[in-house]
Amino acid sequence: MKRFGKKMEKGIKVVSVLMTVITLIWLTYFFSESLISCLLLVWKHTVGHVDVPVLGSEGERELGLIGWGGFCIAIMAVCGVRKRLASVFYGKSGKWCALLTLPPLVVAIVTYAANWGAGYGILYRSDGNMGLYYDQIFSYVGWAVLSGLSLFAAGVYVFGMDRIYVEQKKAEQYRVQAAVYRTLEEQYTQAERLRHDLKNHVLALRGLWEDQAWEKLGDYLKRMENSAQLGMSEEATGNRAVDALLCQKRKLAEGKSIAWECDVRIPKQCPVNEFDLCILFGNILDNAVEACGRLQRREQGQGMQPFIRVQAGTVKSCFLLEVKNSMSEEETQKPQGHGIGLLNVGDVVREYNAVVKTEIQNGVYDISVLLPLAETVYDIERVV
Image (cartoon, rainbow, N blue to C red; front, side, top):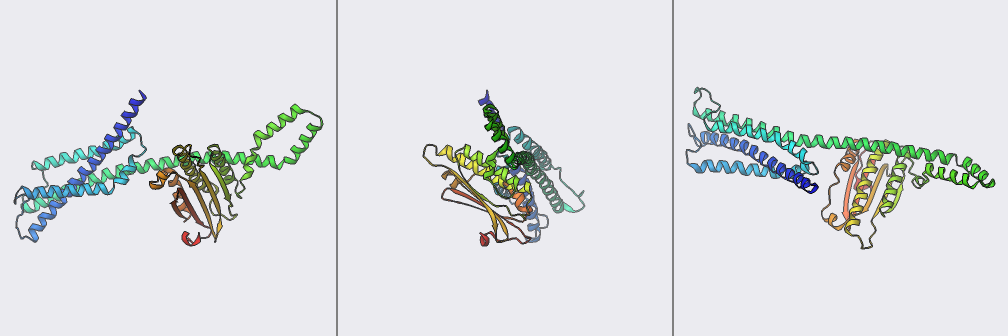
């Protein structure tokens, strides 16, 4: 049953993609054919000096050329946005794809009905006051406007819905990350309080040891272990939220047998607030961990340990964050997109007039983010 459901889901997505592409080609064809017809009439009248030009008067070949011209323009137009269309449907559910396809299809059917009516004489006319030539011009212009508006509406709906989907996912991820970072900061604060009271704890432990109260001593140590989270002390960046985040990512990497190297120093006068710093570090490191995980699955048993190296600090009046991680050769040749995560990174980059540089070389993915500490925007090539 589950396999049948997956096949049905895949079938719905394939049909939705095909119907959307056909709909866009259809509407673009209507628009371009009408526009070509109108321009050809004007050309015959003005350059060819034909008083009352009529399309098709020179034979079916003329109408065929107009049709093929419109079809070629439609194919080229849709091919021009094929990557954008692919991203619209990538990773979406079958239900979402179907809802995305139906409204443009309805618009195309209505437009086709209007075209059918035009073929049977239901045209834009001037009641015979301006002659057959201008009646044809008005008809084709009106048809081009109608089909153009239909194409515009279909495009706005398809790409607008994708934009709404992306924004909703980004907002959802922001909310989740904000909750995680607040939790991490609370845990880190508890650890800081414990370390602050370490002297008192040592005195209490010494007293229990002198009294040989071993059971109480064990319970006391266990409570300290559960509440201290002393592993966080390995990260000391100058920012508590980033410390907590890096601690979590380090533990995640170590749990997946990923070699971890980290040297991060957050400047005291860093213009980026804590939440945006966590968005920046969190999304980049999440992508690094995922890439290392895929590398492990593809090259399991070859004795290759994936790695993540994190460096950040002040460089020539800028804050530079650089993350390097290993990745599979397959992804090196054809890197996979990182989706919503890097969109959130892009939002932070734009907000602070930062610069991003990515590079893939010898199985290593390298991303650098340069944020100016002053108002001036620096060239990353000169600073790095």
